[in-house]
Amino acid sequence: MSQIKILVFDIDGVITDGKRYLSEDTETKSLSMKDLDAIRQFQESGYIIGCISGEDTDFSEKFVQITHLDQVRLGCKSKDTAFKEMVKQYNLSLREACYIGDGKYDVPALKIAGLALCPSDAIDEVKQVADIVLTRKGGEGCIAESYTLLAKRMCGNAAMDKEWGVVVAQRMQDHLTVLTDLQKEQEYIAGIMEAASMIADSYRRYGRVLICGNGGSAADAQHLAGELVGRFYLERRALDAEALTVNSSVLTAVANDYDYDMVFARQVEAKASEGDILIGITTSGTSENIQKAFKKAKHLGARTILLTGKVARDAKILQVTDCLLSVPAKDTPRIQEMHIMIGHIICELVEREVAEV
Image 1 (cartoon, one colour):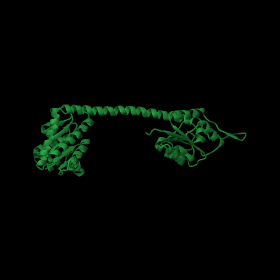
Image 2: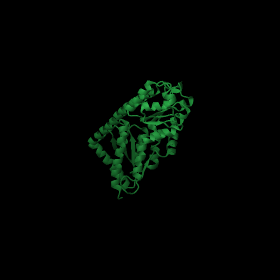
Image 3: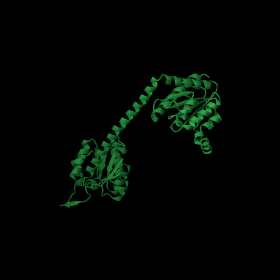
Image 4: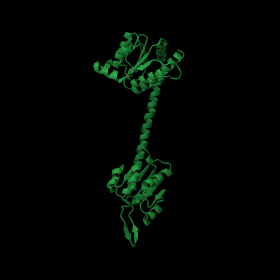
């Protein structure tokens, strides 16, 4: 939601009720003192205030004199053009501009305004394009109501900014807390180096790396495979790595003909050989399809690396895991953030080892 910085309104039908009163050949119109006070409040609050009127009369001239507006266009029928010019003059965007109008000549300007308002007695064509139809009629406090409305929007934005700022700061702190816990665990750091060594050793023998995961972990699997096949930091030969989530026909065929729990195991059976590496990424450590894939890999003589969150010591998958990288956390987003960082570190270490191969 963009903050409104400039307010532009029509005079007849907004500031006034649109009616003309003649007294001894002098035209008079009714004004709401609330609107005059609201214009002053807008200006004191730092808003740029302007008016665009299709008429140029003694009344409109006097109105302009007493209000000291920042921008004025009288006798103007092309209101959208005038509106754009006003906004551009202050290097603002139309999203930061509010327009209040009631008649057919106001429609083009209302359509391009960041916030389009109209009085309750505006014509139907105007009401259809307005973002908000005010409860007040023209000449009965439309500007005052608009001030209250925008003040609430500003307070809402401020409250939202404060609330969101707290969330952002807290999530960053949560990330740092998990990272700090990882840094303190020498066993975990040793595990990362062990995983990199396992992969590098496989590549020296021209083996391959298969990676699997579900949901966000599937995206991480594809990401890491891309780092190995392409390059990370160094120019070197392409490294054989494949995410087992990228072939939708295979996935759906296996899931349909067998079971979703078999979508990775079946591919491991087709692709893995002795000395290859299977990396499983699962924040819970309980994904059945990864567990079955690990069992199949072990049966074929491939080695397994598990990236997971905090898991029970008796978790079944640990029986078929050669290298465990368990993030000491239970919050899925924080675990996933650590997984991609760990994956990047492993890719860097592996690349350093095999760059000359």
